Image 1 (cartoon, rainbow, N blue to C red):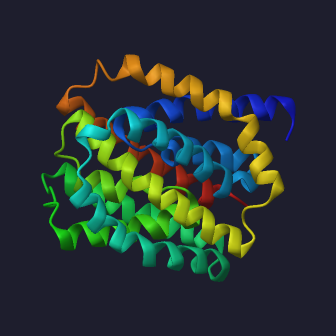
Image 2: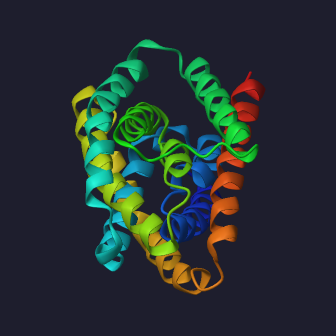
Length: 240
């Protein structure tokens, strides 16, 4: 990766880390389409490792607001979803999988925008967790399903619960990707080089959090899901 490419990726990771620390997800949604254009080898491994570092910091900061019961049910679904995501990464052409994922996310966003708010009961949490596991492991974009099911939570509860879920989920994804060979020495090296960007994003999020009331938080989450899915589809369709 060239110096200019690294600068572009660093800026993308900076703002994506800020979003992740502000609403509980966003690293993959905001950074993945940009990183995929600059250096596709950083997806999904490096982005998942970066997201894990940010979610660890947020989970510690918002630990008193975490819904451990809801997180537990979601993780029940995340485990098989993570394994399936790793297998899909090996079995299905990357472009086809990305387009399918983008369409599923857009469908969920459309339902939510029309007023559908899934109740965070165990069945829905397990389904969302499984979907997030597939998406997160295969493409580093696992936030939308969980954002849709937890969108009614308050700021600290949304950030803390999402971060607790994604911290464990990211570790599972990294383990599966390591087994499949998608995480290697270059992945870890690039992750280390981008640590200053995620630290900067985390610090910036502390100022952004004061601006996010419940309505802004909900529509920011929905808007980022829409933008990320659309960008992913446009990028994959446009690749020759």
